[in-house]
Image 1 (cartoon, helix red, strand yellow):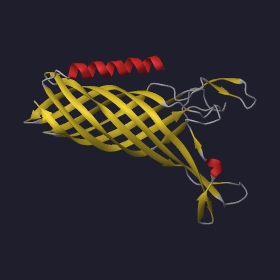
Image 2 (image 1 turned 90 degrees about the vertical axis):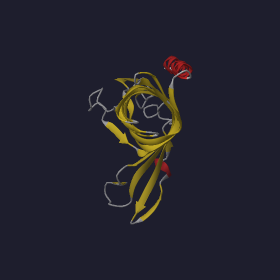
Image 3 (image 1 turned 120 degrees about the vertical axis):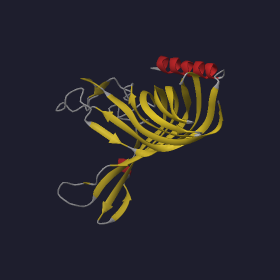
Image 4 (image 1 turned 60 degrees about the vertical axis):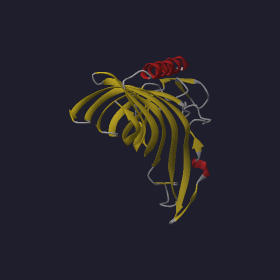
Length: 245
């Protein structure tokens, strides 16, 4: 996994070095909606081994800086750095099966930084107006994936510390996740003069679990491999502060 990250980082540096000599270039910023989606399988034998039955959709935003350059006849690259935030709530559920209240739920918060490089093709549909198709990898590093428990006791909401955890520092090996993720994205966009709109989907390429196999309650390794993906929907609007053709 570390070798994959090193190769991708070297690839980003190479692209940046080549981009320095491009005839059409721009540097700017973007902000937009992000939906990181964590898909995991289960240690429960009632589910198929490879079925990603546990899905958590986080809704939030991303903000970042971007460099854009064209090689020749519309072919080029777009690379940059993002900060991504996402949050989600589980439904309220009974704490005790014999009583409606109290009820508990979990709020999840996700923070990450990303380095992305997209290979793209721009074609002009009107003067200074372009459609864009792109694809490429993103390296994500999770800063935090925290869970905060809440308890509702007849309308009075308070903290429920038993539900608190950090999935990147979890003591349970069956729920502990790794910080590094690599995705491959596809998307499309629109550019008018210095302003642009881009959106797409990133497919996770790395198993999010730290453990390769689930662990039983007695500490023995189970005959069930861990599986999962950290995907992401995104749509961004932005502007180039500097642009030359």
